[in-house]
Image 1 (tube, rainbow, N blue to C red):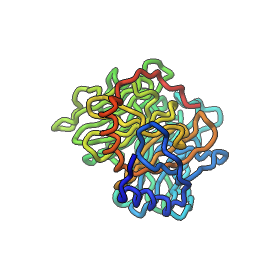
Image 2 (image 1 turned 120 degrees about the vertical axis):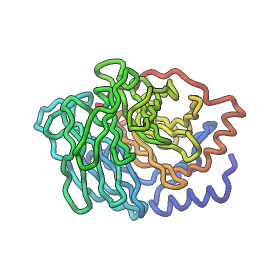
Image 3 (image 1 turned 180 degrees about the horizontal axis):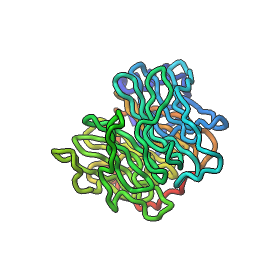
Image 4 (image 1 turned 90 degrees about the vertical axis):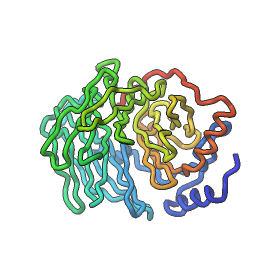
Length: 343
């Protein structure tokens, strides 16, 4: 596959900024082009990234799931713990995961960070806020049996998936209002032990959600007065799909298949194909974030227990992927079973 000079410049800039090691593209597999591991993380220190967002200066803010930490990774390879959420009492059995778990993260223009915490206790579970230079504080309490997971900001509200209750919450950033915005069978897992609604993004006045247990990508329109519309299934057969991001090319989506060690390119017609695999360095991908022409993938190594990391790849090659898929007749729906629970 030929790479244009503009794409080569993008990939090289990523390597210089993070001093990552180049990885070969997967042979015979459509890819984002020149994926690079930009940071190897410390598994022994609990550095298993669950979600991430970008800073204007090129840094990445990452939630470290079971370490309950919010960490900033800088371009000069610095690692700064911005805040650590309090742990629940020893022996607390948090829903689905068995232990306390920090999930989605959102950054406001003033630098304030919001994260979701599933701790298994009523005094800790909910939406937490971290202002620059401050300590984390809970602003929205959520039920102890909830697993708040994906998070996005839209129209002055924060929307959050609930993986155990099969719902979407809507909350104000100041914590003055919080309620279940949408609850539907499509958002629920097939079994009580499975993850239902997981990743969440908002585009064109609609909430887009993945369900890990069912392997689906869903779309819920936001009505004129903020009320939810009918759930529409965009794609199915996605495996243990976790978080996702839009490519910047219409409604095309890049989604992380956690247990399957794949990043899938999903088209608006529901067809999908793998564009990154374990051969590109994936270690149970959990989330993706896009800044400009670059997509960042967080790998938690939940099941491989080998090399949690962050990968970057230039997004421009998606144009080449589309042409190649159409010519080869690839990207068809493929059946996939649910991924195993995190442990």
